[in-house]
Every structure is written in structure tokens, then in C-alpha cells.
Length: 180
Image 1: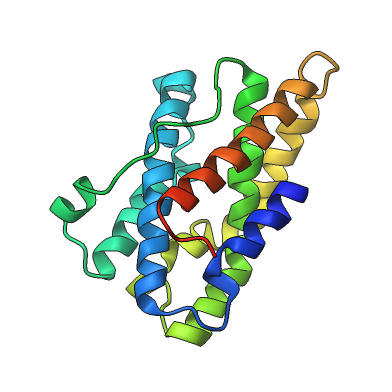
Image 2 (image 1 turned 180 degrees about the vertical axis):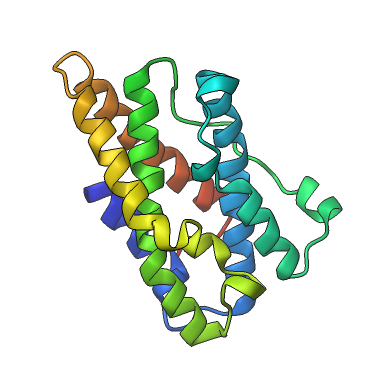
């Protein structure tokens, strides 16, 4: 919770002086974190266990296109190499806890972004509502799976990975120059 609040305070998405250029830079940085993290998750899960309905990178790419970036521009964006550890199912759930929780926060952010910048799903903010009407259902399903995993040997790994995910994401966003 402390890491979440600290990161939220530094991310200018909720600040009244947010402009389109800053918003685009933030989405570029999000892509630079989400793309390699999704590849790492996919490699960990294997093809049979992937959850395509939870993947967000394609939506980020669509938003970046809508905001004026070409495929070539996107391919040149820097990507994060310092990702949280992922060699245990507890790590997976810790990472997913942060990423799925951020999806819930996107529900609030999408309204702010539309109000401040006039950007909505069709023109660059689909990522902020990536699950649409399924957001609540997918969050509850994730929490149910997390509860099934509850075990004294696993719980510390979940917490460790969640904290590491917040730390890696904040460091990445700082390196990208998008934090306040």
C-alpha cells in the first residue's frame, strides 16, 4: 500500500497540469514495462496456460497508434530489463496483483483523462479501460484464484513479487522521465 501510494503521487496522470505530450510519454513508458513483462509471464506460463483476455500490450499499441506513433516508432521505444523475479507461482500472483489492481485504477483515470485531454478509448485511452465491462468480473476471478493459493509457504513470495513489481515499475518510470 505504501509503495502504491508513493508511485501514484509521483505519476502525473491525476495532476491538473497533465498535457497530451506527457500522457503520450507515460503510455510509451507503460508499453516499455508491460511488453517485456508480458513476454516473461507468457514464457513462465507456457502457451497452454496463457490468459489472452488479460493481456494488455495489444491495447497499449492501439492507443499509441491512435496517439500518432507508427509501428516503427513503437519498435524503437526503450523496454525495461529490470523486471520483478518470476520463478515461482507466488511471484506470478504477486506481479498479477499489481497489474490487475492497476487495471481497476484505470477506471478512475480514464474519466480524468477524458475530462482533461478529451482522450477516450477510441483515440488513445483504451488501455485505461482495457477490460471494459469485464473489469469487475476479472478482478473477482483473480482474487478467487489468489485466495486458493493462500499458503504460508507461498504468501511471502506473493508479497515479495508485488513489492518488487511496484519498485521495478517506479524505477522504470523514473528512468523514462515521466514521474514528478
